[in-house]
Length: 368
Image (cartoon, rainbow, N blue to C red; front, side, top):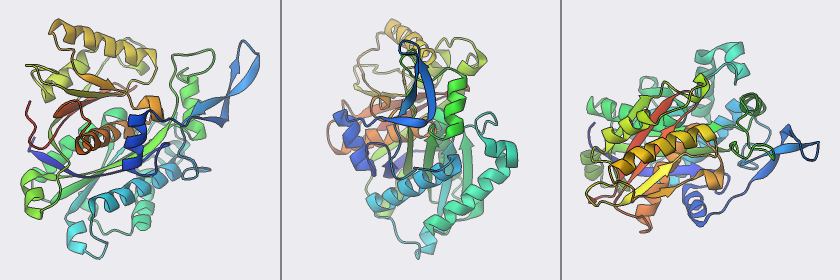
C-alpha cells in the first residue's frame, strides 16, 4: 500500500456534534445514554417492560428511519470535515472533481432493512447517494464513488481501496465517510432477535449507538505539495474474514484478528519496546470479548502486552460501521493534543458477519 497521509477529519456522535468535541468527550469519559422507546424488553425481576438504553445523536436523527439517519450523520460529518480541514467551497470544481468518495456502511441485510426487501440494495443506495449529493451540493464524479458494506471492518477496507486507487492517479485524494445507526426500529428488532441488546437480564449485551466520521486521505507527496496540514500517516491497513463469526453460531479463536494485526504491524504491538494505543471495538458482547481474549493470549506468548487499550463504546455505544473511522479520528486528535501513549496506534475491528480489520496509524515523524 502506498504511503497515505490523513489530512482531515470530521465527525458527529452522541457526545459531540463535531470531531473535536466528540474526541474530547470520549477522552474525558463523558457518556449520554438515553432510554429508547422503539423497543421494550421485559425485566424478569420486576416483571415489567423497560425500554432499551442507547446512544442517539439527539435532535439530528430523531424521527428518521435508517436511510434518513445515514443521510443526517453523513452530511454532518462531511460538513465538519470541510470546516476542520479548511476545504474549498463547491465553486472549486477542480478540487472536488479530483476528489474520490468511499462510503462505509453496514451490510445490507434484508433481515435488518425493509428497504432492501422492498427495493433491493442497488436502488436503495443509488437513491441515498443522490439525496446526499443534493444535500452537500458538492460536484463529484460518479466513477469515483465507491461503497463498502463491511460493517465494523469497513474503514480498514476503505483505506486499502483508497491506496490502490490513488496509486492509479485517477483522483488526487479520497473522502472516506463511515456512518451507521443501530437505533432505527428495524435494526433494534434485528439486534433483539439475536439477543444482542444489553438489558437488566442480559449484562453482556451491547448498547446501540450511531455516529458518522469522515476522513480525508491523500498521498503523502501530494499532501506536502498542496501544503496542507498532515494529522497522521496511514502506513498500512488490512482486512480478513473470520469463518467462526457470531452469525455462524461458532466461537472465534481470534486467529483472523491476529493475521490482520500482523499484516499491518509485523513485529506485533508493541514489539521491540515500542509504545502506543489499541483502539478496539469491544462493546460488551461475549463473542467479541472471547475473540479479544484469545488474541491477548497469543500476544502474551510473544511478550507483547504493553500498549494502552481504549474503548470508544464506553462513551458512545456500538456505532457499527462508523467505529473504525471514529477510532482513526481519536488517534489523530491524541497526536494533535499530545496525550497519545506513543507515536503509533492500531485500530482493530471485528463484525458479526466475520469481517475483521486493522489500521496502523502513525504520528508524522514517529517511528516503530
